[in-house]
Structure formats: C-alpha cells, structure tokens
Length: 62
Image 1 (cartoon, rainbow, N blue to C red):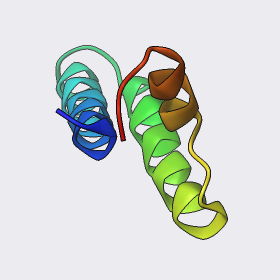
Image 2: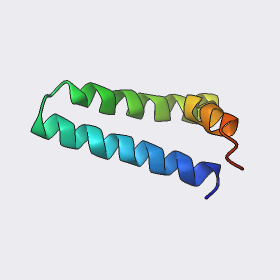
Image 3: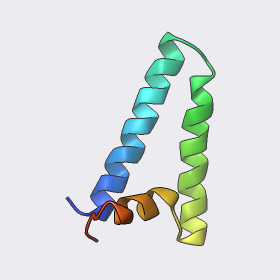
Image 4: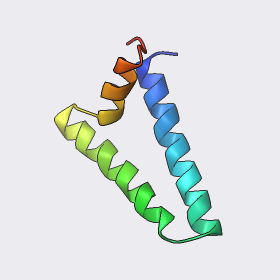
C-alpha cells in the first residue's frame, strides 16, 4: 500500500474505534473522533498532515 491508502486506513480505523468506544464506554471518546475530523479538515486546507509526516519517517512510499 502507498502513503494515501495508509492514511485513509488509519483515519478510518481511528474514527471507527473511537465511535465504538464512545458508544460502549464513555462519550469522551467522541472528542478523539472530533480531533481526527478537524485534522482531516485542516490538512485539506494546509496540505499538511502530521500522520503523513510520521508515515514518511517510517519509510512508507508515496
């Protein structure tokens, strides 16, 4: 998988897990869902995403 596929997989997994945890355990987990959403929105405008920087350091190819 390439960088964009990894990014989508990680973002989707984070959202899914945080929603499940929010429904089952505590509403505070929805704060993490909001954090992921805001990060995706800011990356659309700034063309910079912290997860992409992290994945590049791990050696994931574009």
